[in-house]
Length: 137
Image 1: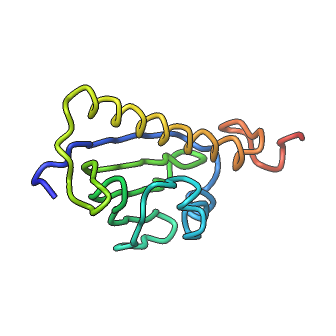
Image 2 (image 1 turned 180 degrees about the vertical axis):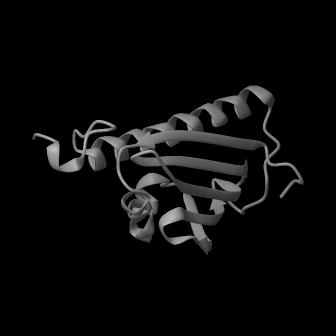
């Protein structure tokens, strides 16, 4: 892999649920292929309620992390992707700038889609500052 990854993506989303709830969404390896269907992940650090770090291969080679930071009455979900597009043999590709920009944009949109999907599912209508027992369905 090149010394500097071609894609260095950071995303943050607040979820009004505890870090353990958010971390649980990433704990099951079967969920990974739903979130990242073209990537093969290998855990190199399971941080429990604080999240996970993976090495990445497949369409990208590099590293990825979700960090579940306790904040206020919920969790700030941080997502980091540091990787380079790869060919089918896992060799890094040197994409032209426009193609790399499209890849970056697609990965950024996918990251936000995952986070907002979790927000919708896990919060179940709860607003920040409102205790979970007060939420009406």
